Length: 128
Image (cartoon, rainbow, N blue to C red; front, side, top):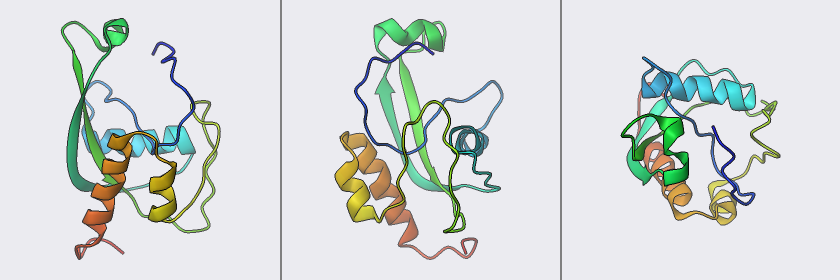
């Protein structure tokens, strides 16, 4: 992936699909790769959005790919868990949603957090 030439900013863990991988498998892998945290299961927040790929980055994504599909997932981990950040990140912070939303500079990141909050507000018997 080329250097994105973006300023520092807060966001959740993100990543791209690898060949033959489902979105759920990618979410589990990206959490492990970027934070060192192993999760067995992720839950869909029921939110999908699409982003255009800048022309200078398109060669990285393959012929004819002009946008990225982003699906939002969340996972449950023990509260004492401490991540071991990959080189993609400079810092982390555990915080309540109110603080998290104030740290998120990009509107789409706020929408992702809101989708998780909405998903958590509905009872789901598979969640702890």
